[in-house]
Length: 356
Length: 279
Image (cartoon, rainbow over all chains, first blue to last red):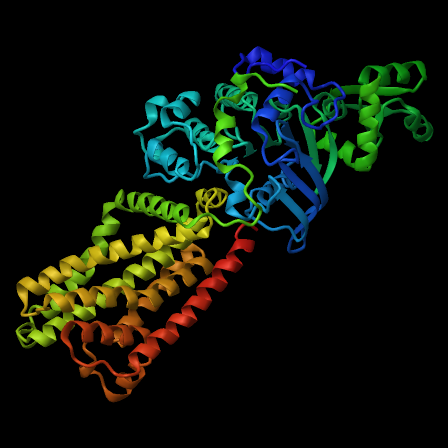
C-alpha cells in the first residue's frame, strides 16, 4: 500500500470513491491507500472507531426514530447516511453530536460520551438550516466558532477554501442562500476536526454550489479526516461516500460499499397490463431479479434489478402483457425494496453480488 | 504501515494538543473562562448591532424618572426621597433587563437553528450561560447610567462614593433572582409565549413591589403583601444601600427564598428543554 499525498486533484479523489466499490472490509487501513496513510497520521484516540453506536433506540413519544441501531465508523472513512426524510438519519446524528441522549444503548464519540464537551473537541458539525446570527459578519462568526478549538484554521485560509474570501466583512444576513450554506459547512471544519458530521449539507443549493461544497469536503477528507454525511439525494451520496449506510424506518437497511449499495438501490420499475390475470401469480414469482410486486387493478408494478433480463424473460416466457413501461425507481421505491428484506439478509446478498 | 511526512500536515498537528481526552474529563477552568468571554463578546456584538434594543432598554427608566420624579418638587428636592426614587427605578431597569434578556431572549435563541449547532461545539452549557449573564449585567448597567445621570443633574439625589460602590454590588445581587426567573421563562416557553408572559410578570411585580410608587404611599394590605414579593425585597435592599434607611428584616430571606425557587424552576426548565426541544 502506497500512501498518497493528501493534497490531490479532484480526479484522484473520484478514483477513490469508485475504487471503494471493491468488496473491501471496513476497518481502517484497508479500504484504500489514502485511508491507510492518513488514518495513521490522525491516530485519534487509539485505533478504535471514531464513532460508535451500540443497540441504540430513541423514541419521540409514540414515534420510534431509531430501533436497535448499531454502527461503527472507523478513522478515515467517508460514510454516507442515505435514507428518505424521517428515516432517522438526523436523530442518529443528534445522538452522535451530543444533542440528545439515546433511550437505550450507547453512543461513543472518540471513545467518550458525546455529551461531554471534551469528546467534541475533534468533532465538527454544521447548522442544519442556514441559521446564522444575521447581525454578525462572516469573519466574526468564523472567529467565534474558531475560538472553541485549540488549533483552528486561519480565517483567510478557511474562507478561501470555501470561496468566501471576499465576504469576510459582510453580515451573514446579507449573504445569498448558497453563500450561507458554504459558510455553514466551513464552520464544520474550522476547528480542524478529525470527524466531520454533516446533515444534508447541500440542501437548497444549485448545481455549481453543490460541486464546490463536495470538492471542499473531498479535499478535507483527503487530508485525513473522517466524514459522515447524510442526504436523501442518491447523487450526493454517489459523489461523496465510499461506504453507504441506508437507514429507513429507524433501522439500518444496508451497510456496504458505495457500488454494492448502488447496485441494490438502483432498481427499475417495470409496469405492464396482464391480459390473462389467472396465470400471473406463479409467473411473476419466478421472474428473475424481482424485488417487489404490487398490483393496481390489472396493472402490475415490478421493482427489478435488471429490467432488460426481466423483459426478455417476459417475452420468451410467453407472458401476454400490454402497455409496457420502464423507468428508474425513485429512492423511496428502492428503499421499499430494501425494507422488504431483513437488514442482515440484505447485507449478505450484497456481498454475494459483489463477489461475482 | 508507514506514513510520509507530508501526511502530518494540518490535521495531524491539530489532534495533538487535545490527544486522547478521557471520556468524562471536564474542560480546564481557564478554558471555560476563555470560552465564557468568547460567548459574552459575540453575544454583546449581536445585541448592539440592533441599537434600538439597547436604547429602548436605557430609555424607559430614564423617561419614567424624568416625567414622574423630577417634576414632583417634594421628592426631587428631598435628597433621601430622590435617591430612593432613583433606586426604585434602577431596580425596575435591572428587573426588566433580566426578564427581557433571559426570558424573551433565551426563548428566541432556542428557536434559531444556530443554537443546537452551538451545543455541538466543545463547550458545555456553562460558557454560553456565563456569557449571557455577563451580557445581561452589562446591559443592565448601561440602562442605569441615564437614570443616575438624570437623578444627579435634576434632583437632589446624592450618594457618597462608598455607598455607590456597595450599591452596585447590591444591584448585581438583587438582579440574580430575576435573571433566574427570566431563564425559567425562556427555557420553558416558545418566544411567542415568552414575550407576553414576561410583560405580565414584569409590570405587576414592579408596581406591587413599589418600583413606580414608593411603598409608603401603599394602603396597609398592599404594603404587607408587597413585602413578600421579590421586587419589593430587592428594592428595599437597594434603597438601604443607597440611602441608609433600614430595610425590613424580612427582605433578605424573602429575596433568597424567591431566588432558590426561581433557580429550581430554571434548572428544571433547562433540563426539560434538552430533551424536548427537537421533537
